[in-house]
Image (cartoon, rainbow, N blue to C red; front, side, top):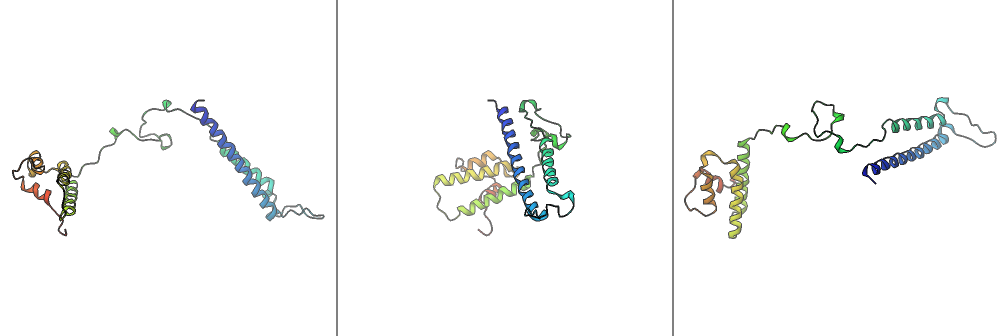
Length: 195
């Protein structure tokens, strides 16, 4: 059985269930209406009249409930469409009700990168890492990993006055013992003042 048929059968079952719920609720409301507003008295000599206007009698109330439900139910007929029928993208100027989904990434301009903010954030993270590592005995593997993590934070925001990043990487990895650029070393070894 194709998926479309399953969806249609599910929608039909959903409508029938909703119809049953509406009928049960309207029956409960009708009985409550009879017991409170109309006060039906079926004893000998009892009154069957309506206490109030005829416009609020039970049959009118139930009829309006069922007509309202039928209008809501039938105003949106069951329809199923496959994804192949829809276009891949739609214009942004179409109405909101006709477009559901995401537009291609190429049409959304990327926000400008604030290099100063990114650099300050990377420096703060490096200082935090150095504070956490301070006073602890790290294994050689942990020291290498810490250096690589700090390098990964520094490289995307590398400042021009920090010198050659490859030479600094060689120093930080322990490959080249030559002293690196002083400014880059300050960032690499920096700690928080409260640390």
